[in-house]
Length: 302
Image (cartoon, rainbow, N blue to C red):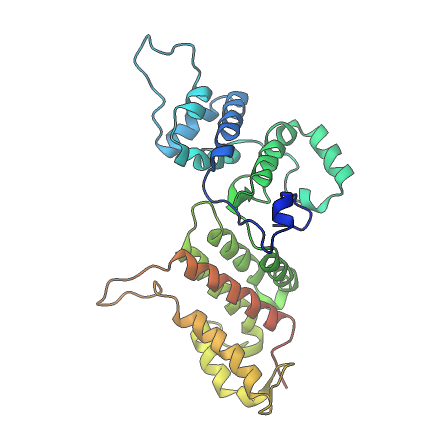
Protein backbone atom coordinates (compact mmCIF):
# COMPACT_ATOMS: atom_id res chain seq x y z
CA UNK A 1 0.00 0.00 0.00
CA UNK A 2 1.36 3.42 -0.87
CA UNK A 3 1.83 6.11 1.75
CA UNK A 4 -0.73 8.45 0.20
CA UNK A 5 -3.51 5.86 -0.06
CA UNK A 6 -6.44 6.64 2.19
CA UNK A 7 -7.07 4.29 5.10
CA UNK A 8 -9.83 4.40 7.74
CA UNK A 9 -9.20 6.47 10.86
CA UNK A 10 -9.41 3.34 13.02
CA UNK A 11 -6.61 1.79 10.98
CA UNK A 12 -4.44 4.89 11.13
CA UNK A 13 -4.75 4.84 14.91
CA UNK A 14 -4.07 1.11 15.14
CA UNK A 15 -0.66 -0.46 15.49
CA UNK A 16 -0.95 -2.25 12.15
CA UNK A 17 -2.69 -1.46 8.88
CA UNK A 18 -5.39 -3.62 7.33
CA UNK A 19 -4.09 -6.19 4.90
CA UNK A 20 -4.91 -6.15 1.20
CA UNK A 21 -8.02 -8.10 0.28
CA UNK A 22 -7.76 -11.10 -2.00
CA UNK A 23 -10.55 -12.17 -4.33
CA UNK A 24 -13.72 -10.06 -4.52
CA UNK A 25 -14.95 -8.72 -1.15
CA UNK A 26 -18.70 -8.16 -0.74
CA UNK A 27 -18.35 -4.37 -0.95
CA UNK A 28 -16.63 -4.62 -4.34
CA UNK A 29 -18.85 -7.19 -6.07
CA UNK A 30 -21.66 -4.93 -7.29
CA UNK A 31 -19.34 -2.10 -8.47
CA UNK A 32 -17.24 -4.61 -10.40
CA UNK A 33 -20.31 -6.12 -12.04
CA UNK A 34 -21.45 -2.63 -13.03
CA UNK A 35 -17.99 -1.91 -14.48
CA UNK A 36 -18.05 -5.16 -16.48
CA UNK A 37 -21.52 -4.34 -17.82
CA UNK A 38 -20.67 -0.83 -19.02
CA UNK A 39 -17.28 -1.84 -20.41
CA UNK A 40 -18.48 -4.94 -22.24
CA UNK A 41 -21.35 -2.97 -23.81
CA UNK A 42 -18.94 -0.22 -24.92
CA UNK A 43 -16.82 -2.50 -27.14
CA UNK A 44 -18.56 -4.52 -29.83
CA UNK A 45 -17.96 -8.23 -29.42
CA UNK A 46 -16.01 -7.85 -26.16
CA UNK A 47 -18.54 -9.79 -24.08
CA UNK A 48 -18.71 -12.66 -26.56
CA UNK A 49 -14.91 -12.89 -26.93
CA UNK A 50 -14.44 -12.78 -23.18
CA UNK A 51 -16.99 -15.55 -22.72
CA UNK A 52 -15.21 -17.72 -25.32
CA UNK A 53 -11.81 -17.08 -23.72
CA UNK A 54 -13.06 -18.10 -20.29
CA UNK A 55 -15.49 -20.81 -21.39
CA UNK A 56 -18.46 -18.90 -19.96
CA UNK A 57 -21.85 -19.88 -21.40
CA UNK A 58 -23.95 -16.79 -22.19
CA UNK A 59 -26.56 -18.57 -24.31
CA UNK A 60 -30.20 -19.09 -23.39
CA UNK A 61 -33.26 -20.73 -24.86
CA UNK A 62 -34.93 -18.81 -27.68
CA UNK A 63 -37.65 -16.55 -26.34
CA UNK A 64 -36.05 -16.13 -22.91
CA UNK A 65 -34.31 -12.96 -21.75
CA UNK A 66 -34.34 -11.50 -25.28
CA UNK A 67 -33.88 -7.96 -24.00
CA UNK A 68 -30.77 -8.83 -21.98
CA UNK A 69 -27.59 -8.11 -23.93
CA UNK A 70 -24.38 -10.17 -23.74
CA UNK A 71 -22.61 -7.51 -21.67
CA UNK A 72 -25.32 -7.62 -19.01
CA UNK A 73 -25.33 -11.40 -19.02
CA UNK A 74 -21.54 -11.48 -18.65
CA UNK A 75 -21.72 -9.04 -15.75
CA UNK A 76 -24.64 -10.46 -13.79
CA UNK A 77 -24.98 -14.12 -14.73
CA UNK A 78 -21.45 -15.21 -13.85
CA UNK A 79 -20.23 -16.40 -10.42
CA UNK A 80 -18.37 -14.00 -8.14
CA UNK A 81 -15.18 -16.04 -8.33
CA UNK A 82 -14.91 -15.43 -12.10
CA UNK A 83 -15.24 -11.62 -11.99
CA UNK A 84 -11.52 -10.87 -11.80
CA UNK A 85 -10.82 -13.20 -14.72
CA UNK A 86 -13.54 -11.46 -16.73
CA UNK A 87 -12.06 -8.04 -15.96
CA UNK A 88 -8.61 -9.32 -16.85
CA UNK A 89 -9.87 -10.52 -20.24
CA UNK A 90 -11.74 -7.28 -20.94
CA UNK A 91 -8.65 -5.19 -20.19
CA UNK A 92 -6.76 -7.14 -22.84
CA UNK A 93 -9.50 -6.49 -25.42
CA UNK A 94 -9.76 -2.75 -24.73
CA UNK A 95 -7.63 -0.10 -26.47
CA UNK A 96 -4.96 1.08 -24.03
CA UNK A 97 -4.44 4.59 -25.38
CA UNK A 98 -1.79 6.33 -23.30
CA UNK A 99 -2.08 4.11 -20.23
CA UNK A 100 1.48 2.78 -20.29
CA UNK A 101 3.82 5.08 -18.40
CA UNK A 102 0.86 6.97 -16.88
CA UNK A 103 2.38 6.69 -13.40
CA UNK A 104 5.31 8.87 -14.50
CA UNK A 105 3.09 11.91 -15.10
CA UNK A 106 2.04 14.70 -12.76
CA UNK A 107 -1.62 14.87 -11.57
CA UNK A 108 -2.31 17.66 -14.09
CA UNK A 109 -0.76 15.65 -16.94
CA UNK A 110 -2.80 12.59 -15.92
CA UNK A 111 -6.00 14.65 -15.93
CA UNK A 112 -5.18 15.92 -19.41
CA UNK A 113 -4.33 12.39 -20.59
CA UNK A 114 -7.62 11.00 -19.30
CA UNK A 115 -9.57 13.84 -20.89
CA UNK A 116 -8.04 13.17 -24.31
CA UNK A 117 -8.12 9.35 -24.12
CA UNK A 118 -11.68 8.41 -23.10
CA UNK A 119 -10.93 4.67 -23.22
CA UNK A 120 -8.86 5.20 -20.08
CA UNK A 121 -10.93 7.91 -18.43
CA UNK A 122 -14.24 6.06 -18.81
CA UNK A 123 -13.04 2.58 -17.96
CA UNK A 124 -9.51 1.95 -16.65
CA UNK A 125 -9.35 4.97 -14.33
CA UNK A 126 -12.63 4.14 -12.50
CA UNK A 127 -11.61 0.49 -12.25
CA UNK A 128 -8.24 1.40 -10.75
CA UNK A 129 -9.99 3.66 -8.26
CA UNK A 130 -12.35 0.87 -7.23
CA UNK A 131 -9.47 -1.55 -6.68
CA UNK A 132 -7.52 1.03 -4.70
CA UNK A 133 -10.45 2.07 -2.50
CA UNK A 134 -11.30 -1.56 -1.76
CA UNK A 135 -7.67 -2.27 -0.78
CA UNK A 136 -7.70 -5.03 -3.39
CA UNK A 137 -4.64 -7.23 -3.70
CA UNK A 138 -4.87 -6.58 -7.45
CA UNK A 139 -4.15 -3.57 -9.63
CA UNK A 140 -4.01 -2.77 -13.34
CA UNK A 141 -0.74 -3.76 -14.99
CA UNK A 142 1.44 -0.89 -16.21
CA UNK A 143 0.53 -1.53 -19.85
CA UNK A 144 -3.18 -1.47 -18.99
CA UNK A 145 -3.91 -4.89 -20.49
CA UNK A 146 -4.24 -7.12 -17.43
CA UNK A 147 -4.68 -7.33 -13.69
CA UNK A 148 -1.67 -8.18 -11.56
CA UNK A 149 -1.12 -8.77 -7.88
CA UNK A 150 0.16 -5.69 -6.10
CA UNK A 151 3.87 -5.73 -5.31
CA UNK A 152 4.96 -4.59 -1.87
CA UNK A 153 6.34 -1.02 -2.24
CA UNK A 154 9.70 -2.02 -0.76
CA UNK A 155 10.02 -4.93 -3.21
CA UNK A 156 8.89 -2.73 -6.09
CA UNK A 157 11.53 -0.13 -5.23
CA UNK A 158 14.36 -2.67 -5.13
CA UNK A 159 13.22 -4.32 -8.33
CA UNK A 160 12.84 -0.98 -10.12
CA UNK A 161 16.44 -0.07 -9.30
CA UNK A 162 17.68 -3.46 -10.51
CA UNK A 163 15.69 -3.18 -13.74
CA UNK A 164 17.03 0.28 -14.48
CA UNK A 165 20.65 -0.49 -13.56
CA UNK A 166 20.70 -3.74 -15.54
CA UNK A 167 19.72 -2.00 -18.76
CA UNK A 168 23.25 -1.98 -20.20
CA UNK A 169 24.75 -3.95 -23.12
CA UNK A 170 27.25 -5.96 -21.06
CA UNK A 171 24.46 -7.35 -18.90
CA UNK A 172 22.61 -8.93 -21.82
CA UNK A 173 18.86 -9.32 -21.39
CA UNK A 174 18.85 -9.17 -17.58
CA UNK A 175 16.26 -6.39 -17.55
CA UNK A 176 13.87 -8.22 -19.86
CA UNK A 177 14.15 -11.50 -17.95
CA UNK A 178 13.67 -9.89 -14.54
CA UNK A 179 10.66 -7.96 -15.82
CA UNK A 180 9.10 -11.17 -17.18
CA UNK A 181 9.82 -12.98 -13.92
CA UNK A 182 8.10 -10.27 -11.89
CA UNK A 183 5.11 -10.22 -14.23
CA UNK A 184 4.70 -14.03 -14.16
CA UNK A 185 5.04 -14.23 -10.37
CA UNK A 186 2.51 -11.47 -9.64
CA UNK A 187 -0.01 -12.13 -12.43
CA UNK A 188 -3.70 -12.64 -11.68
CA UNK A 189 -3.08 -16.28 -12.55
CA UNK A 190 0.63 -16.68 -11.62
CA UNK A 191 2.95 -18.83 -13.71
CA UNK A 192 5.48 -20.05 -11.11
CA UNK A 193 7.50 -22.18 -13.55
CA UNK A 194 7.99 -19.27 -15.95
CA UNK A 195 8.69 -16.83 -13.11
CA UNK A 196 11.37 -19.04 -11.61
CA UNK A 197 12.98 -19.78 -14.97
CA UNK A 198 13.06 -16.10 -15.94
CA UNK A 199 14.52 -15.19 -12.52
CA UNK A 200 17.44 -17.55 -13.13
CA UNK A 201 17.95 -16.18 -16.65
CA UNK A 202 18.05 -12.65 -15.23
CA UNK A 203 20.86 -13.56 -12.84
CA UNK A 204 22.73 -15.47 -15.55
CA UNK A 205 22.58 -12.41 -17.81
CA UNK A 206 23.68 -10.05 -15.05
CA UNK A 207 26.54 -12.21 -13.73
CA UNK A 208 27.91 -13.49 -17.05
CA UNK A 209 30.29 -10.59 -17.71
CA UNK A 210 31.70 -10.81 -14.19
CA UNK A 211 32.05 -14.56 -13.70
CA UNK A 212 32.32 -16.32 -17.07
CA UNK A 213 32.55 -13.78 -19.90
CA UNK A 214 34.33 -16.23 -22.23
CA UNK A 215 31.90 -19.11 -21.63
CA UNK A 216 29.12 -18.63 -24.20
CA UNK A 217 27.01 -21.47 -22.78
CA UNK A 218 27.38 -20.50 -19.12
CA UNK A 219 24.53 -21.26 -16.73
CA UNK A 220 23.94 -20.28 -13.15
CA UNK A 221 25.31 -23.71 -12.22
CA UNK A 222 28.59 -23.24 -14.10
CA UNK A 223 28.86 -19.70 -12.73
CA UNK A 224 28.57 -21.08 -9.21
CA UNK A 225 31.45 -23.43 -9.93
CA UNK A 226 33.49 -20.55 -11.33
CA UNK A 227 32.59 -18.38 -8.35
CA UNK A 228 34.16 -20.94 -6.02
CA UNK A 229 37.26 -21.26 -8.20
CA UNK A 230 37.97 -17.53 -8.35
CA UNK A 231 36.68 -16.54 -4.91
CA UNK A 232 40.10 -15.08 -4.02
CA UNK A 233 39.78 -12.70 -6.98
CA UNK A 234 36.31 -11.43 -6.06
CA UNK A 235 35.45 -8.56 -3.75
CA UNK A 236 32.24 -7.18 -2.23
CA UNK A 237 31.75 -3.87 -0.37
CA UNK A 238 30.71 -5.49 2.92
CA UNK A 239 33.65 -7.78 3.55
CA UNK A 240 32.83 -9.10 6.99
CA UNK A 241 35.25 -10.03 9.78
CA UNK A 242 37.08 -12.82 7.98
CA UNK A 243 38.75 -10.81 5.24
CA UNK A 244 35.73 -10.71 2.94
CA UNK A 245 34.68 -14.32 3.25
CA UNK A 246 31.28 -13.59 4.80
CA UNK A 247 30.19 -11.10 2.16
CA UNK A 248 31.09 -13.42 -0.68
CA UNK A 249 29.53 -16.36 1.13
CA UNK A 250 26.19 -14.52 1.25
CA UNK A 251 26.24 -13.92 -2.51
CA UNK A 252 27.25 -17.53 -3.16
CA UNK A 253 24.54 -18.93 -0.91
CA UNK A 254 21.89 -16.78 -2.60
CA UNK A 255 23.01 -18.02 -6.02
CA UNK A 256 23.04 -21.62 -4.84
CA UNK A 257 19.60 -21.35 -3.24
CA UNK A 258 18.16 -19.94 -6.43
CA UNK A 259 19.83 -22.61 -8.58
CA UNK A 260 19.08 -25.68 -6.47
CA UNK A 261 15.57 -24.51 -5.61
CA UNK A 262 14.36 -24.90 -9.19
CA UNK A 263 12.53 -28.23 -9.13
CA UNK A 264 11.19 -28.28 -12.70
CA UNK A 265 14.47 -27.78 -14.56
CA UNK A 266 15.18 -31.45 -15.37
CA UNK A 267 13.19 -34.65 -15.56
CA UNK A 268 14.32 -37.92 -13.99
CA UNK A 269 12.93 -41.18 -12.58
CA UNK A 270 10.90 -39.22 -10.05
CA UNK A 271 7.85 -37.16 -11.00
CA UNK A 272 8.92 -33.61 -11.86
CA UNK A 273 7.53 -31.11 -9.35
CA UNK A 274 6.73 -27.63 -10.57
CA UNK A 275 7.63 -24.64 -8.43
CA UNK A 276 4.94 -23.19 -6.20
CA UNK A 277 3.76 -19.60 -6.35
CA UNK A 278 5.54 -18.81 -3.08
CA UNK A 279 8.78 -20.34 -4.32
CA UNK A 280 8.55 -18.29 -7.50
CA UNK A 281 7.98 -15.03 -5.62
CA UNK A 282 11.00 -15.71 -3.39
CA UNK A 283 13.06 -16.59 -6.47
CA UNK A 284 12.16 -13.25 -8.07
CA UNK A 285 13.16 -11.39 -4.91
CA UNK A 286 16.47 -13.27 -4.78
CA UNK A 287 17.08 -12.58 -8.44
CA UNK A 288 16.37 -8.84 -8.07
CA UNK A 289 19.02 -8.56 -5.35
CA UNK A 290 21.57 -10.67 -7.22
CA UNK A 291 21.04 -8.75 -10.45
CA UNK A 292 21.60 -5.50 -8.56
CA UNK A 293 24.76 -6.87 -6.90
CA UNK A 294 26.36 -7.77 -10.23
CA UNK A 295 25.23 -4.91 -12.46
CA UNK A 296 26.12 -2.23 -9.90
CA UNK A 297 29.62 -3.61 -9.44
CA UNK A 298 29.03 -4.65 -5.84
CA UNK A 299 30.44 -8.03 -6.87
CA UNK A 300 33.53 -7.62 -9.02
CA UNK A 301 36.94 -9.04 -9.76
CA UNK A 302 39.90 -7.37 -8.05
